Image (cartoon, rainbow, N blue to C red):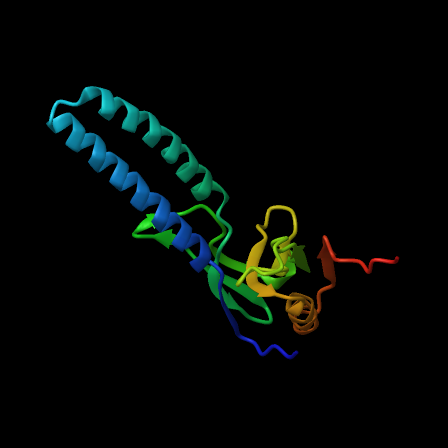
Length: 174
């Protein structure tokens, strides 16, 4: 696999979809609370408010731990655009980072579903550029079925960085 620079990346779309769903569910729950209060059904409104508190808690966790980024990788720098959803800023890296502020290209191997008949899913990888102290890690790609190893090696070659593998699968000996 060869990589040409500049390399444009967008790994935020998965989290944007999840967050839109979570925010939509929050909106529906709040609308339900308002409707129940408007007809005087306080008990149901209280139950919905309790459920909304739980949903809101999950939404906050999703916002806090989302990991996507949008930007461009050059030979000498990484430009990361601010991550925002519906005009709301999300946590994560943003700005211009010199290539020297990164120490490696990291490929994280993730397992897939146990159900082999699943129509989607399966083993996949996250390819990061790992920041030195004071510099955030930036998610460059989401790949599947082992292609992350090749992409990570290609990125490491053009950036002159080592490749680090995390949770790499090992051969099973019987």
